[in-house]
Image (spheres, rainbow, N blue to C red):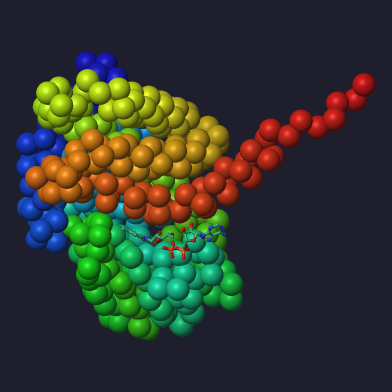
Length: 383
Ligand SMILES: Cc1cc2nc3c(=O)[nH]c(=O)nc-3n(C[C@H](O)[C@H](O)[C@H](O)COP(=O)(O)OP(=O)(O)OC[C@H]3O[C@@H](n4cnc5c(N)ncnc54)[C@H](O)[C@@H]3O)c2cc1C
C-alpha cells in the first residue's frame, strides 16, 4: 500500500471504531458523567491516543491532514472522546513531542500512547480566560525544584488526568511545567452542573506549594507563552477546527434524515423550499469548512508558517458553521429535536462551546483582523 492508502485506511478504521464502540453509548456517557476507562484502553490499544506521534513512541504517525480527518471522525460521533484527543494527544502530547526534552518524550509519550497516563492542559483560571497572559498562578525557585501556587479552572479531563501542563508566572514571565498528579499539594475538583462537556471530567485544579523537579520545565524558563502556550494552542485549534466539521456533518445528516422521514401537510419535510434552503446552506458551509481545514492541514504538513493563521481561520470558521448547522438541524426537527431521542439537542449544546474554547471567536477575530490589516494594505504606489 502507498503512503496515502495506509493513512486513509487508519482513518477508515477509526470511523468504524467510532460507529461500533462509541456512537451507541454517547448519551450514556453524558448520563454517567464520563467516558469509561475501558473505552480509553480500547482507544489506546488501537493507537488512537497517539495518532500523530511517531511509531517509536507507540504512535500511528498520522500526518496533519489525516490526523485532521481522524479527528473529524471522532468529532462526528462523540464530543467527549474527541475532547480527549484534543487535550491528551494534541495539546499535551504534540506539545511534548515538539518542545519536550528527550527524557520527557521517552518518559511520557509511550505512557500516554498506552493510556497509562492521561494528559490535561492547565492555562485558564477562575479569574483569567482570554487575557491568558494575566495568569495568577505563580512559581518560584527553591534549591532543587520550582514551587507552584495557584488554581486552574475548566480543565478538560482534569479530574482524570495523571499529568498536567501547568502554566505559571513569575514577575510577569510565564513558564510551562509538567506536573504529575502524584505531586504533593495538587488536588482536583470536578465541575458539576454543566450544559456541555458532561463526560469530559472538567475540573478545577488547586496547586498548593507543589514542588516540581527542575527537569519538568517544558521549553525554556520564562518563555511559557512564546513557546509552549502558542504551540499548544495551535495544536488545540487545529483539533477544534476539525471537531467543528465533524459536529456539523453529524447535524447535517440528522437534518437530512429527519426531513426525508417526517411528513406535514401530506408531504415530506424535504419537499418544502424553506427546509431545502437550510439543507443547501448546510452542505455549502460544511464543504467550505472542510476545504479550509484541509488547506490548513496541507500547510502544516509542509511546515509552512502560514499554517498558523490558516489554522486560526479554520477554527473560527468551522466553529461558527457548527453552531449554525446545529441550530438549523434542531429547527428541522421541531419539538422532537428537544429530546435526547434525537442527537440534535446534544449537538446544539456542544456546538456552542467550540466558539469559546481554545480562544473565543472574538480572540480569533482579533488575530485574523491583525493579519488582514498587515497583509491586505495597499500602500501608495510610486508613479
Ligand atoms: C468545556 C470547556 C473546556 C475547557 N477546557 C479547557 C482546558 O482544558 N484548559 C484550559 O486551560 N482552559 C479550558 N477552558 C477554558 C477556555 O479556554 C476559556 O473559557 C476561554 O479561553 C475563554 O475564557 P473565559 O471563559 O474566561 O471568558 P472571558 O475571557 O471572560 O471572556 C468572556 C467573553 O468576553 C469576550 N472577550 C474577552 N476579551 C475580549 C476582547 N479583548 N475583545 C472582545 N471580546 C472579548 C470573550 O470572547 C467572551 O465572549 C475550557 C472551557 C470550557 C467551557
